[in-house]
Each structure stands twice: as structure tokens, then as C-alpha cells.
Image (cartoon, rainbow, N blue to C red):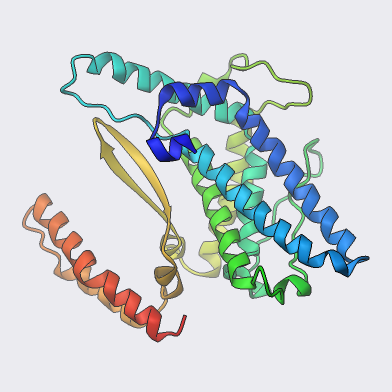
Length: 321
């Protein structure tokens, strides 16, 4: 919570990494998956437990979202000001800390589980409400790892639930899918991610029962699972479809370029295929002032803030959402 509220702090981040928080999140993912399957089995024999289960399921989803936001916050860097006297020293410390963070995440987070969660929760979101839109999860039969590749099916009683309604369930699942996608992207595509650089002893001694992973394992997860997800979405829709759901931009924060990930707001996601929205976007691209870099940025920003946001909100309201 401190990382989200006060902003990135290298000392806090290092303390959390050295304390084994990444391995604990790995355990959380496995326990959550096991508990979800177990509780659904219990409810089949005792319907009286259903209201309690739905309350627990909502808390479990919120817990997953919080844990993933925590992991992504560890990738944030402190602001660097080149005017400060100790800028060079701080810059070197930030660079070394980022290398340490990426290596710890590579070693202690299971890339297969992250990728499986991208697909599993995508399949439980509104994007796959139509069974034909579900994406197959890749399973490696010979792997001695927790099985998180089994397809999860939402039972009819959960679809018809009154307290934790379907729309909210689907929103939570889409957010979890997005956060897992952002985490995988943030680690795997970081310039500090280096296969040869990870050929060294683990940074933290494993506790009994803890596993360690490698950059090669992340590469394999990308090739077999992550790319499978991206290609499946493109095949079902089009190459730009995911851009209307999962956002990613690069910003110059101080003296370092940093990636920022965000879940596209609900109105944009809901109206991504509407013709009026598409027409506005095409018109904006054509009409933006290109007389210079600053003019282009200002023209685009004004068009979005003065016209696009209110226009989309109005269309969303007319849609009756």
C-alpha cells in the first residue's frame, strides 16, 4: 500500500523483495486456484454455502487484484532530477536496483502461472462470454508444476448470482487478466531482462518448498503461452483489438523512460467497435496539427480532453450501459 500511496521508494522495494514477498504471491496464486476448485465442489453438495462462497469469491478476486498491483508497483522507479548534485550516484543506484528487481522477479515468479492467469481470467471476462471466444490454455504434460492450465467454467448459479453480479465478476476477471499481462510485459520486455545475465546463483536462498525460475523459462512461457494468447486475440478479432482494452505508454520520468500500463476505461472498451467512435478517431488522426512536435502533442491532447472524452461518455450513456 505504501508503494501505491507515497510513490516508489528503493529502500522499501528492496526490503519487500529480500523478505520473500514474490514467493508468497506465487503461493497465493496456487492456493487461490486450489481453493476455488475445492469450494465449487463443496457447494454442489451444500447449496446453503453458496451466498458465503460468492462473498468469498469477490474477496479472492479483490485480493488477486491488490497483489498484482503491488507487484507492478515494484517496477516503478524513483524520480531523478539531473539538476541535483548527486544525480550521477542516484542514477547508478536506480539502474542497479532495477536490474536486481527484474532478476528477483524472473527467479521467484512462475511465468507459466502468470500466462495461464492471463488466459483463464480473459475466458471468465465479458470478452469470452460467448464460448466461441474462449482461448485454449496450453498445458505441458511433463512439467512438475502446479496445474493452472485447466479451463475454468463459471457455473450457472454464479452467472445468476444477485450479490456478486455477473458484470462485476467479469470486470474483476478482465482486470486480473490485464494486470497479469502488464506484469509479464513489464518483466519480460524490460531492457534489464537478459538471459545471460541471469545465469548466476539465486539472489535469495530458497525456503523449503520454494521453486526458482530462469530467464529461459520466461522465454519459453512467452513462446508457448503469451504469444498464443496474443495471436488468438488477433485471429478472433484484429491486430489492434487489444489496444482498446489494455493500454501501454512510455513516459519520460525525470531522466529515464518508463512504461506505464493501464486498463482502458469501460466506455472505451464497450464502444471499441462503434462506427461513430471510429470515425472520430480517424478524423483526429487526419486533422491533428503536425507543424511541429509540440504543436502535434498539444493539438492531440486538446482534441482528446475537449471533445473525445465527453463524446464517448455521451455515446456510452445513450447505449444505456
